[in-house]
Picture 1 (cartoon, rainbow, N blue to C red):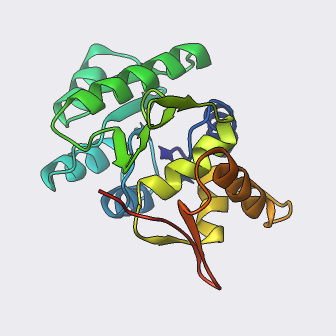
Picture 2 (picture 1 turned 135 degrees about the horizontal axis):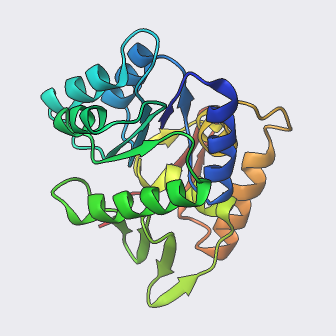
Picture 3 (picture 1 turned 180 degrees about the vertical axis):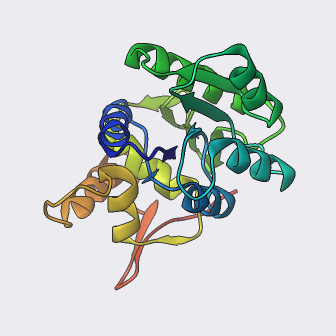
Length: 219
């Protein structure tokens, strides 16, 4: 999730990270960011410091006080050792000062996702029967064979596998994978689900009529 009130920057980052294969949510307010981060199962939060509602320091501190261990990368237009120390003292994992290189940001994101996967939090590897999805390495295996997926195919599968056994609506998949700006045909989700069934296994993803899709939970 990106919590950034500069809408052009937020949209630019969301488009770039989506192109890298990540599912991205964007909010522009500190209070909304805190609520979404508390309720959602995010792998990483990119958090601006100067936000309306609640500033990034307070959002970060509140998440840590509530026991949320999601990796947090702080962004700020400020520059100074005190600001960095304050950000890290509230529980942020990394800190990036604007203006920054997009390449550097992506490198930091990947490093935090790897580090988060090695910690005590949720594992980035999801196993359902003979299906294994590594959300940090962006790799999918069916039995011993690796399955090659496009960035969008992986993002759709990721939304289903992290909520295995639950029904995920078409609108939720659109919001996470194609982001809030998508204005195309919503039936694009059906196309990608059909492709995943063909590449993986036909019965793995069930259609729940009128509700969405469910990835069958297997042991």
